[in-house]
Amino acid sequence: MNTFLSVNATAVADLTGEAFRSASIRLADRHTWTDLVASASQDQALLEALTLSGLASYRSPKHPLGVVEAFRAKADLLNLRLESAGAAEALLDLLPYRDRRGTRRGVPGMQACVIGKQLELTASFGDKSGIRWNAADPSVRIHLQGDGPLAAVLQARHERAIQERCTPQWVPGEAVAPLRRRPPLDRDVISQHRASAQLASALLRRPRMWTALVGHDGLTVSSALSEHGLDWTLTRTVAGGAAPHDERLVELLQDAITGPDLQLLDHICEPKTCTLRFVGSGGRVEGWRGILTVRTEHGNSATGRPGRALAALGEARAPSRPARRAGAGSRPEQSRCFVLTSGPSSPGAVHGVTTAVADRLVTAWAAEGHRAAVLTINDGDFEFSWYHSGNGAWPKTDVPRPAGHVMRWNRLRLTPGNGEAWKASLNPRPRLFAVVDDEAIDAALDAARERCSRIIVVDGRPSAWAGGLTNKGVDGVLFAFGAREYPRCTTTPKWRKAVDGDHAVDLAPEDSAALWRERHLGQHDLSQLPLAGLVLLHIRKEETLLDSFTEQVEGHLSRYGTPVLGWLPPEVEEDRLLRSGATKTALDRMSQENREGEIAAASAIGGKLW
Image (cartoon, rainbow, N blue to C red; front, side, top):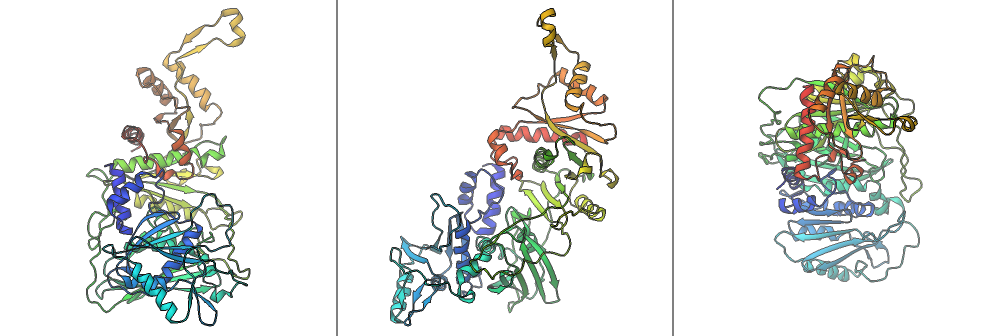
């Protein structure tokens, strides 16, 4: 099996409980591996948020919320395996019914039916925004551990409703009269959970995350309305000998590839308790209007679970002996930092070509066994977002944001072996005319050097081309752009063809170097730029012919002060489009031959810089 796929499948199995083979088959069919656990669609996330609230009343010392595994997750479907019928009974309390007074209870629009041994929950929430072409209804399929049947559980719920002189309204196909008016917010569970549906969905799809932590003893879930949305509180109990604070939990919740990509709001640690508060990385993005509070305290158990290593965190041994993976080679590599730019004539390319090149290099170096990182520096990044809850008077305020800028390091991808690939963005709080100050840049560079040995800075500010970071201890500037093969001959100009005819003149290596440099770099002033080298990308899938002529041309280019570090292989058009918004998938969905060529090209470039 592909070792890259194996690492990703292992990370998914560690967090969701899904079988390794099942995770491998599902991931192999995906075009991008930007997030290994699939994210739910809008209505699916709402159904899963309600499912989480239904399971919150179930207590289990072994499996949080009674969920053994969450598997075969898609945008419109989630399979949950529960440890007992008791967990399914707690979930069925959400089903809608009309009591003896005619008042509607439960979740309007939720339906339940038995398919074989499975119990399927679907919903029709109404108020759908936008156009849905052939979109499936949201669905959560419930399985029992050991494949026990669930028909008796649903039948018992139906009989209990009849005995209480209630009218069930969860049978598929039966017409239900619509509500005459919208209920008040304190009783409108759909509007409540819609506010932070994505947050609850992300937690439900990762049930094994908690049992991987040292000393895990139990977990309870609750939610509460607030002025900015719906907040979720998870009370986590650990054994008496375990520390309340666990940095692994912070890493998991903030991870963008395997985790829910949250941002730490604040952290209060006391001798016997630890309280962490998180918000969505965007803060005001639809479906994330809420705060996740994780409160850890000691339980009644003297000894809890020992915890286990997680591929999602790059761990190779038990967490009781925390040890991060070592870099390639026996001697630690010297940390060096380079700024990567595309020049002043194409400001948009800083976020296009340059970002793609930086991600390709870093992921390839990580696959080779190095610790590498991409640090992006931008000026003000103003955010726009909209939210409609169905109740015009709520939410009343924005979700709280961290005080000041917080550096968030995320894994660019998961790699086998000892390599690590990281990505971080440095930009001020979202406001107009914001500027990154020097202290923030110094702190970011120091953090990058402490974490990694190979660092590429993508500077999106106007001063980047003029070497604006050279006073920050960077080791030079790299210039990346598209180019063609070095010319080997020149032809007669059109206006001379009538006199001299069509005649080609062979070029010597020094002439070819001068002509190529003038064509590609003549419009740029490189005299004041501390240029470390050029990273070139093939245009129109043209590959450079590597022979003695090419070596001589690059030798003359180096003598001119513009050394060519290497050429990156051309990207397939489909891969380029897929990675336009998700460049962290470099090296994925590649053939073994193309992957080896990508790593070899990046290794040659890195070998000239380190």
